[in-house]
Each structure stands twice: as C-alpha cells, then as structure tokens.
Length: 251
Image (tube, rainbow, N blue to C red; front, side, top):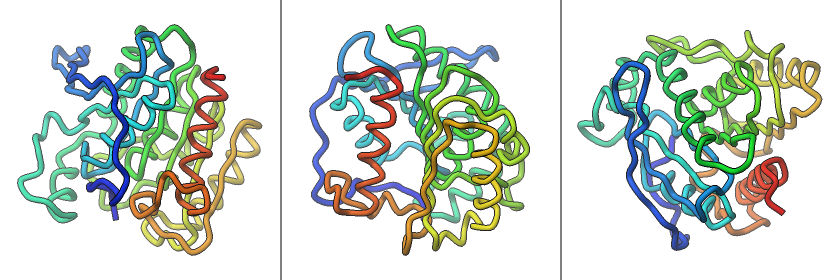
C-alpha cells in the first residue's frame, strides 16, 4: 500500500512553501513543491511512490523543513497528469505510461537544482516504494548524495512497463551514506531480493546501513506515528532525519 493521506493526529509544522518549476534539458518544466527552513539550508529531495505527490509527502516536506532542511517534492508524473480517480488501479495504469529512465534523468536535474540553492554539499534524497528504487539508483549513478530509501525494489516488478535500471545490477557502484528500510512482511518488494541486495550493498559500500523491521509490511511509514520513537515506524523516521542531519552537516 502506498502513501496518500496525512497520518491522523499529526499536524504539520509551519514552513515556507512555494510552488516551483524545474527546467529540464528537454525544454519541459517539472513542477515541484519547495518547502524550506531558511535560504541555503541543506537540500533533501523527496521521491514519492506511484501515487505521486500527496498530503503525506507534503507533510514530510514540512517535517524536514522544521528539522533544518529545504525539501523539494517534484511531480514525476507531470507528463501523464493527475490521477483520474483515487486508488491503486488508476495509479498502476498511469505508471504504465511513465518512462522511468526518463524520470531518473528528471530527478538528477532536481538534485542539481537543489544543490545550486544550498550552501552545503552533498544533497540528500529520501524515496519511497517506486521512489525508493529511484533513490537507490541515484546512489549508484552519481556521487555527493546522502540517501534514505524506504521499501525500494532491488528488482522492479515485472509488470512495470518502462522500468528504471535494477538497483541490484548497479549495487557494485553504490556510493555515499545510504540508509534503507524494509518490513519483513513486505510481499510486494520480495524479501529474497532485498536480502541479496543488502548483502551485496554492504560488500560494495562501507557506508551502507539497512534494517528489516519485524511484523511490518509495505508502506509501513504511512501507518506510523512519526513523532513517537516507541513506534517502530516512527523510530525509522527519527533515524532517517538523524542520518540526513549528520551527513548534511546540521549540528
């Protein structure tokens, strides 16, 4: 299950929000939400799941801004347009129209856009599901990134029409501090491929860390209390923010 609604009882902090456009080499402009703590703050790119931009991710952007970052939430589905109706079936149909290698190129441009507006290097990425796959691919294809990946697919599902590169094929080039999370009941991702990926990632990159959470399935963060460190999912969020703060040099 992907993320759409704001977790109940978790109000978003105040933050400066603005809609921006990211110019692409194709001549197109990718729309994005930019939420910032202060000009020049360290940048974090939020890469959403196949439902795309939603109140859930807007909430995460506000939380990251409150933690001292500038967060950028792009709409990778801007060429396909909004979902005609809510639900997984419509999201799968829209995703079938997405060229995910092109999306990966778009996200590289978004990373550069953030980097030019930050006084610190590197830039952070945090991705979920499809976005977690993109985050792992980015971590293997360019340097100067601090990565968090939630339930990324080491091997994208066979039903994806135009998939990105398989992270497991690029794992030997994995670079930078990478923190990844999965739940052990995630039948969507396939835990056998996660185990293979994690083993190879640890061999390739001494800065790779991961956790497989007992009793949790796909999309567990959407049902977690992000402000409660006693909540297993909430604890991963606290760990993610600490990972980003440490490696993006926020004291």
